[in-house]
Image (cartoon, rainbow, N blue to C red; front, side):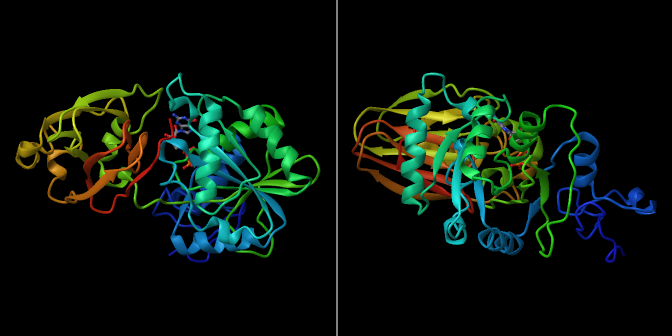
Length: 367
Ligand code: GDP
């Protein structure tokens, strides 16, 4: 058992079982005299921040401790999964600290979409969710777009304070911080790690030039994401990698769309109308008659309607149905982690289906 071994870099308890969790080090590292966890190893040798995740309880502890600091909080969300990556409790913990809200993965938005509109939408949505950010920015960490602007905004709003970066896993927090490191320190500079004194925070500090630091906190897992229900090999099918090409469907009443075998939309009533799908370009959309949809799913989920895979079907959760009446035009039906369908005109009666455990919601259209 390794229960006594601590990482020299960050002080975390070292474990050798789960590479995606805090404190992981390969078993071979235990033979060395001074042991550092894989996360610190990467930071030390490659200047690279690695993504680690936490349990909900540990995450609440971290939010609590961040709330007690005097700092700027930078909260990263994935604009493709805005609500799913929101961190609902955060505003209760921030205390008097300012929150700078950064929407990542801007590169996925169709080119025709005005960034100012999305930023405005994010501000309004944040307010509705109880958070009043000091500013809202859009970036693409992956493409390196607007990183300089983000670095400048962080420097402006932190007013000589420390900066905590928070966000749930998969929002691109590590990618963002790695970009930021290059922006702030320039390539090749050495980054040091240190344990945040006197707390249980398993954080990584990147020193800023005034003696303050940018502090990366571990991400919390969003359990309601579609990603948890697909095979690892299919993640690339549902996770968009480049600009989304919206697909428009003219549907008659009593027609159904399947998104692979992961989600379903029934158009129940409201006359012929258009639906715009903002879903990964790689995921097949299949149109059928509503009266045939149940049968089709029963017979073809896992093959024609895939992902999920056939060998997964035994444990794949049943699709759960929720009915909505769309009262306003330009309403998004959001399938958490998969994307959304915009209902362009008001007055449609629809039913949306996702695997049990995945979130589904309607919202004012983002685009
Ligand atoms: P973390 O868990 O929040 O640290 O997220 P990562 O930095 O590991 O990124 C999660 C996934 O999102 C990876 O597959 C990244 O390639 C992807 N990703 C990160 N930033 C962007 C971005 O700006 N655009 C797109 N399209 N994907 C991104």
